[in-house]
Length: 369
Image (cartoon, rainbow, N blue to C red; front, side, top):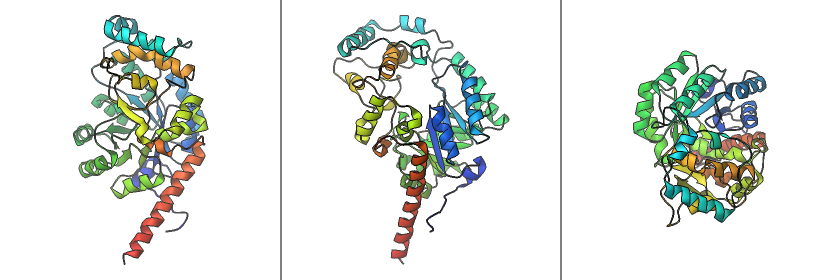
């Protein structure tokens, strides 16, 4: 195996990318650099308002210069038809309002100054449909759903020539996605940052590969090294889907206190909690997250009530770079974050690590002759 071996799978050929590395990020600068380095970037737009999306994607298109990219949306079921955050706040239980008020006082939480998704919106069917319309009208070559399988969206996206991705956490969800015609399954294990399921990545991947047939499978969850991508490929996956790693890139503009927390954290410093959104979500822990595990803490409210309850605090800790409270969705791959880097450096390290892992495997094979 040569030093310059390039690992390409059928899905790389299909999408026109050089490496089987798929990178999710909320930052335009990150997705552009992933594309330039030969990976397939996926821009998360679940936190953006529909009127903001066209301008964001116009910037992406201008900078991509024809390179392929995808967009990720979060489309959970059981949300209200319309998003009236004031109405939702009016329905919040007094017990929860009192608890959060006590935390605000205890931690000295300052009000956020800037408006944001978390302070002005709640997830609703009306919001989702508007986001979907803007994404389908864009030049994005792929559409991914992190939560929620919607037959109509899959059909509409495919009709516009877009590749559809579905992040799934169980064989049951995989079968449902396949029945709907999803083009690429992303087997997202328990290790993943954000909303995730109960099965570990390297237990989940072979199960999804077994039912996927000719549908490509990507591995997601806890992946921060190229050797892990190659390991997933050995199980039948066609690439790795990474999210947490890019938060250490300079292009992500991560708040300094959050970057410091990520650098200092190991896999065991992430925890699955409902305190962020109301659904199980893996985050890097902080004093705010720990407070929701204390004996006096009430159970988190279901989505979208929890966001209406605590969204201003989440916005505040990021806006003010609160070193004690700040957290973000992060997977067990946080172990791979050792300091600030760049996307180009991260991509090169991933590719080099895949090559080194391949050489190790070849050495083992020779030794067994």
